[in-house]
Length: 165
Image (cartoon, rainbow, N blue to C red; front, side):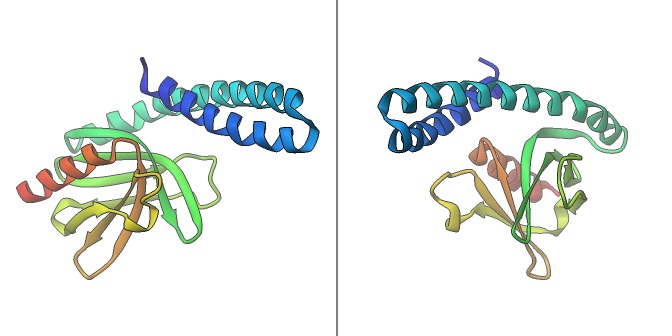
């Protein structure tokens, strides 16, 4: 099953549960169940379509990056900037870690961290609930928080490639 479909289903189920509980408390069990299922399904469809569309849009950017560097892995991600979680795409290349936000953010930006500047990549202990947040530590003591799917894979790939850089 496509990873975007899996993610959309999971997001839809989470919303369905929360909205089902909310509407059950407000209007009764029958309305709660119906609203939870409908809202969860609609949200899953919207998120699946959005994530699939974003993947296709970032294909052009991937092609541009590959003209200069070898892309080793890429996927959707969120970059924390202050209190905003900025959505976009994360690329690991043979030379750097690159984040490019999509256009649906307040703080649109691109970030590039040369692999030689990364000192450590680790789990984010403050968000251990969802287990998808990681911290990139760089020379000079700066830290960057990213949220990704398959965090263990990202950490392994980045760690292996900073050793090689």
